[in-house]
Length: 481
Image (cartoon, rainbow, N blue to C red; front, side):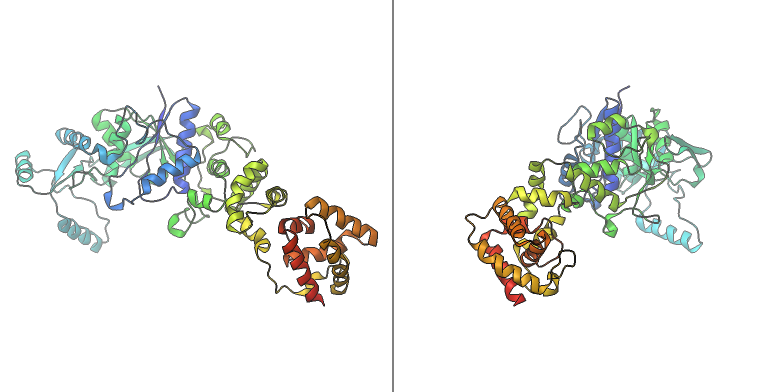
């Protein structure tokens, strides 16, 4: 048997973290077993369709490195891979169920159903369709259809007995059929419902393992009744526990939680996100935390899937992302950092210095904007008490003396490079018999206006260039005078 898994999102928005994890696990399981990973777009609910969402699904999965073997844009022998393009195939299957007594035509209007629902609510009961149209004669059904009367096709759930299924994570689940509703299979517009289309598609596309969120646990007994009605082999079910924001609620865009592309825009690396998301609900069986995609494929085993909800820890993701950033080559770091440096107005400065001073401190790339802001524009209203530093043995008077001596000499330097600045300043401190910090602290303050900076006084001076560095030093001297 060739393992065939699928990711089947609805085009209703961005790729959220729960959906990304489902896609990732389905991808890893297929690749681990030399199988096929398929993408299917489930757009039967046209009312919820969001323009551009399909392209967002494509781009998100590609950015995540989850490239599908079959799908709408790459084709395959089981296409079309967009449900709305498969519309004509569902009705014949529904009619087959009608012939077998496993489904029936229903002509109840929305107003009639609303009235019955209200009646049930008034009695404190949950509404369940009462099989009102089940016993219509074949002749009456044909007459009403011929007359153009709107109808749906409903699944005929047995009124007694149990329906159930086996799940890899949750084990055996059985439900009393009397608790199940005769759900709609074909809507009045001729489109299948999600609950019907996904069963037909999974079977006709040869899906062997169905990975999806546990919100579908309650519907799966009805799906299995359909498989049994057709006499089809059932897939292996793997219902995944939810990704939680905290102990009380699921991670959700509705509450402002970020989706995959939101995290990318916030400066996270795709590889770090994928590595972390893989561990939210799955364990490799040891303490290992860092995996490439190929290593995830090799290590992935469904026995490691959690039976408990998994909490998405943003702090842990940030830590992992920082570790990934530190492992980048200088060239890779600059490729990622350059857009943020340019946006901050410092893209013209020395990239080699930026690598040295920023890469060890960058946790997400959006950190860069705040770290380098002072280079683009000095807050000239900084307080002179910043010049006081006990460790460096400085105070405003000491700093004024330092500036008075060092600024004229800096103006005479033949060139303004990091090496030249370093050699001059270190020699100056040695000749004056002062601590390096006594010289470098006031220079750092005058050029940055803050006590904590990425890089020290020499790197900052080199980045700013001669004219701007001297302008800031002279401003510092004036503030101290």
